[in-house]
Image (cartoon, rainbow, N blue to C red):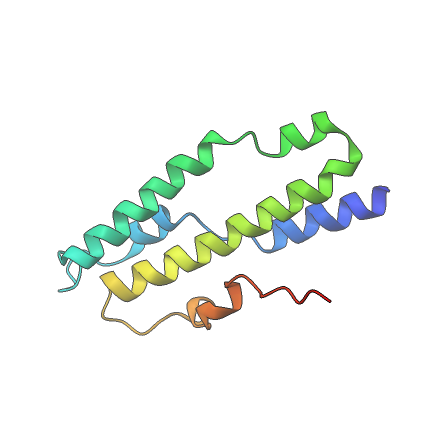
Length: 119
Protein backbone atom coordinates (compact mmCIF):
# COMPACT_ATOMS: atom_id res chain seq x y z
CA UNK A 1 0.00 0.00 0.00
CA UNK A 2 2.72 2.43 0.94
CA UNK A 3 4.64 1.57 -2.21
CA UNK A 4 1.64 2.41 -4.41
CA UNK A 5 1.19 5.71 -2.59
CA UNK A 6 4.88 6.60 -2.98
CA UNK A 7 4.83 5.67 -6.68
CA UNK A 8 1.71 7.76 -7.35
CA UNK A 9 3.10 10.74 -5.48
CA UNK A 10 6.52 10.56 -7.14
CA UNK A 11 4.93 10.24 -10.58
CA UNK A 12 2.82 13.30 -9.91
CA UNK A 13 5.78 15.34 -8.69
CA UNK A 14 8.10 14.19 -11.49
CA UNK A 15 5.67 15.16 -14.22
CA UNK A 16 4.64 18.53 -12.87
CA UNK A 17 3.96 21.09 -15.53
CA UNK A 18 3.95 24.78 -14.73
CA UNK A 19 0.75 26.74 -14.98
CA UNK A 20 -0.11 27.98 -18.49
CA UNK A 21 -0.55 31.46 -17.00
CA UNK A 22 3.02 31.35 -15.68
CA UNK A 23 4.25 30.06 -19.03
CA UNK A 24 2.42 32.86 -20.85
CA UNK A 25 4.08 35.46 -18.65
CA UNK A 26 7.48 34.05 -19.64
CA UNK A 27 6.83 34.73 -23.33
CA UNK A 28 8.10 37.93 -24.89
CA UNK A 29 5.56 40.75 -24.97
CA UNK A 30 7.59 42.31 -27.80
CA UNK A 31 6.61 39.50 -30.16
CA UNK A 32 4.32 40.55 -33.00
CA UNK A 33 1.89 37.72 -32.16
CA UNK A 34 1.45 38.85 -28.53
CA UNK A 35 -1.24 41.45 -29.32
CA UNK A 36 -3.16 39.22 -31.73
CA UNK A 37 -6.76 38.22 -30.92
CA UNK A 38 -5.74 34.55 -30.99
CA UNK A 39 -3.11 35.17 -28.31
CA UNK A 40 -5.57 37.12 -26.18
CA UNK A 41 -8.01 34.23 -26.45
CA UNK A 42 -5.30 31.70 -25.50
CA UNK A 43 -4.29 33.81 -22.47
CA UNK A 44 -7.93 34.06 -21.39
CA UNK A 45 -8.38 30.29 -21.73
CA UNK A 46 -5.27 29.75 -19.59
CA UNK A 47 -6.46 32.12 -16.86
CA UNK A 48 -9.93 30.53 -16.88
CA UNK A 49 -8.33 27.10 -16.50
CA UNK A 50 -6.18 28.33 -13.62
CA UNK A 51 -9.27 29.66 -11.85
CA UNK A 52 -11.13 26.35 -12.34
CA UNK A 53 -8.13 24.39 -11.13
CA UNK A 54 -8.09 26.30 -7.84
CA UNK A 55 -11.75 25.48 -7.17
CA UNK A 56 -11.41 21.72 -6.75
CA UNK A 57 -10.37 20.15 -3.44
CA UNK A 58 -7.06 18.58 -4.54
CA UNK A 59 -4.93 16.02 -2.67
CA UNK A 60 -6.43 16.67 0.76
CA UNK A 61 -9.82 15.53 -0.47
CA UNK A 62 -8.36 12.18 -1.56
CA UNK A 63 -6.77 11.62 1.82
CA UNK A 64 -10.15 12.17 3.48
CA UNK A 65 -11.78 9.53 1.28
CA UNK A 66 -9.24 6.88 2.18
CA UNK A 67 -6.43 4.93 0.56
CA UNK A 68 -8.49 3.65 -2.35
CA UNK A 69 -9.20 7.15 -3.60
CA UNK A 70 -5.50 7.89 -4.13
CA UNK A 71 -5.69 6.30 -7.60
CA UNK A 72 -8.59 8.56 -8.47
CA UNK A 73 -6.75 11.63 -7.23
CA UNK A 74 -3.62 10.61 -9.17
CA UNK A 75 -5.72 10.22 -12.34
CA UNK A 76 -7.18 13.70 -11.83
CA UNK A 77 -3.71 15.17 -11.33
CA UNK A 78 -2.47 13.43 -14.49
CA UNK A 79 -5.38 14.88 -16.45
CA UNK A 80 -4.59 18.36 -15.09
CA UNK A 81 -0.98 18.02 -16.19
CA UNK A 82 -2.10 17.03 -19.67
CA UNK A 83 -4.41 20.03 -19.84
CA UNK A 84 -1.62 22.35 -18.67
CA UNK A 85 0.70 21.02 -21.39
CA UNK A 86 -1.96 21.44 -24.06
CA UNK A 87 -2.78 24.98 -22.95
CA UNK A 88 0.89 25.96 -22.74
CA UNK A 89 1.48 24.52 -26.22
CA UNK A 90 -1.53 26.37 -27.63
CA UNK A 91 -0.43 29.60 -25.96
CA UNK A 92 3.07 29.27 -27.41
CA UNK A 93 1.71 28.66 -30.91
CA UNK A 94 -0.66 31.63 -30.66
CA UNK A 95 1.58 34.11 -28.82
CA UNK A 96 5.16 33.43 -29.93
CA UNK A 97 7.01 33.38 -33.23
CA UNK A 98 9.75 31.21 -31.72
CA UNK A 99 9.84 27.47 -32.44
CA UNK A 100 8.18 25.20 -29.90
CA UNK A 101 10.39 24.24 -26.95
CA UNK A 102 11.33 20.59 -26.74
CA UNK A 103 8.90 19.85 -23.88
CA UNK A 104 5.96 21.29 -25.85
CA UNK A 105 6.86 19.71 -29.18
CA UNK A 106 4.46 16.77 -29.17
CA UNK A 107 1.42 15.57 -31.06
CA UNK A 108 -1.67 16.91 -29.25
CA UNK A 109 -3.63 13.87 -30.43
CA UNK A 110 -1.87 11.72 -27.81
CA UNK A 111 -4.07 13.37 -25.18
CA UNK A 112 -7.29 12.92 -27.15
CA UNK A 113 -9.84 10.54 -25.63
CA UNK A 114 -9.30 6.99 -26.81
CA UNK A 115 -12.13 5.15 -28.55
CA UNK A 116 -13.28 2.28 -26.38
CA UNK A 117 -13.60 -1.10 -28.00
CA UNK A 118 -16.49 -3.03 -26.56
CA UNK A 119 -17.07 -6.69 -27.36
